[in-house]
Structure formats: structure tokens, C-alpha cells
Image (tube, rainbow, N blue to C red; front, side, top):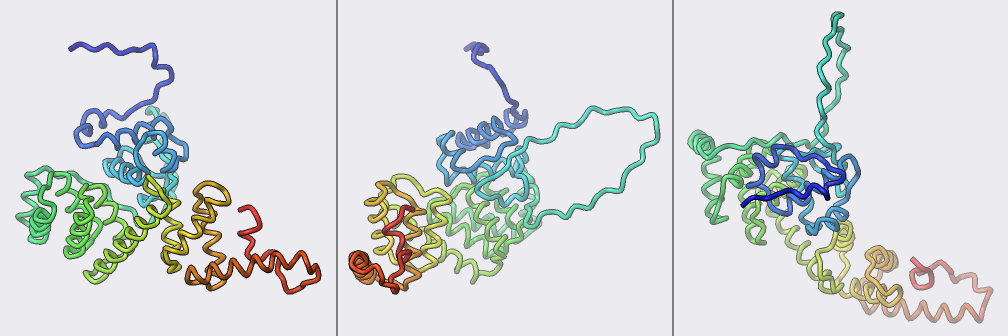
Length: 334
């Protein structure tokens, strides 16, 4: 079938590295390609996960996974470290300047030493199946890692084997830690290499290097995602919370707030501003926490007492003991 390009709609164009079309189309998913195209179109500008998600249709939770893939194949680079924040600066690879023939002897200035950023991952090497086989024959640890991982994941392609080798050789995680990580990812149905790499990089940054520490981290992750699921259901959310919203959820979990109190704050939020606002809910919860309110019954009693004080203020303008700013969440806009 012959195809003709409609050049009439081209307008302004932007470049795509040839390596993407020549070598990476089979490896990249549709979501990864969408994210790359959007980043290349806006190269040099600061982008957030939320903006990328809104313009590509890729879920916010998957945006960082997609970015991680293109970093590892060296197509895009973050402004600072590979452990990127939710807002990143994407820059296109530098274009070399044309060579200029010097007639005078070149005097090179003393190079300025620049300390490499901490926690920077080494560039990932992609080994062929034959190279992986040779490595397994020469390294009992790698051999055992691949074989046990296969029993956990059931299916394993070349990309996944390269991921495991990269985690072991370059991130430096121990064998038992890697197997714990893979078992956890498989248990939640996240078997894709880029997700496993992201968790592994986070563990390496946290220096989780023992089986005990790995099991503790798995338990923490399970408790967090269970808590996140409950909050999502209580807030009647149809989509996965954004990175910023999840930061609030982590904060509430660390404050040991129970779900009943959080849901009550949500109901107040919807009643007062008629929309979901994590910032608004957080201010309510912080106010209750600072007043040492632990149960829903205590919160309701506190609200009742506050309303009574509010009524009494109109009858006594000289009540110096009453703090007008107290519990401002109920009388001021947030």
C-alpha cells in the first residue's frame, strides 16, 4: 500500500532522534512514545507530570515510568539527576558545533572540576541473549537471580533480564533484596521492567541493602497503597491521585489520622467549596491534629463547642479569652 504524507498540515516542525525510529519502536510502548513526543515538542521548557498527562492521555502515575525508559536509552536527560522530581527540565542532546581549523596553537584552559551529582545511575547497557547467557555461566549470582525471577514472573523477555542485571550490577542491590522487590511487584500486578527499575532505584537511594530492610519497605508500601485506595474510594475519585495529592495522603498516614476523620474533613470540604481540594482538607486535618483530636466523636464535640463560642461572641464583645483566629478553617475561606 502506498501512502502519501499530507505536507499541507505540517506547519512548525520539531526533530525526533533517528535512534527512536531505527532501534526503539519495538521496545517502546504507546504511552512512552506519547510522552517522548510531547517532551520533544516542548524541549527546553519545564514540564510537570500533570501537564504531560493532561496533553497525552497517559495516566499521571505512568508518566515518570515513561520518562525513566527514555533516560535509560539516553534519548532524553533530566536537568540534574536521574532521580527526578515531579517537575523536570528536559533538554535535547547538544548539537556539536562545526569544526574550525585553528592556525594558532591551541591553548587549553584548565578544566573546571564539577562534582558529579549524587545518586546518579550509570547508563544502562543492553545485552543480547547470548551475552546474557555468557554472563549467567560466569556469575552464579546472576544465574540464580535470572532463574528465580523467571519462576516468580513466569514470563521474562530480554528487557526484563537486562533490568535485573542492571539492578544487580549498577544499583548494587543484593540478590535477596532484588528477589524481594520482584516478588512484591509481581504480587501487585506490576511486572513491567520500567516499574521494577523505578522501585529499585528508590531502594538504592534509600540504601535498602538487607533482607530485613526490604521486607520492612514492602510492608510500608503495602500499607500505604491500601491506605491510598481507601482514601480514593472515600473521596469518590475515579482516577489515580496525582503525585501532589499522594504527598498529602502520605502526610496524613504519617500523622496516624484515621479514615473516619479524613472522610469527615472531605465532607466539610465538599459542603463549603463544592469541590475536592486536598489543600483544603489538609488544613482542616492539621487544625484538628494540632488540637489533639483523635476520634470522630472528639471532632464533632469540638465543632459543637466552637459553634457555641461563635454564638456567644455576639453577646459579649469584651470576651478576651476567645480567640477569633481559632479554628479559622470554619469561618474563613481557604
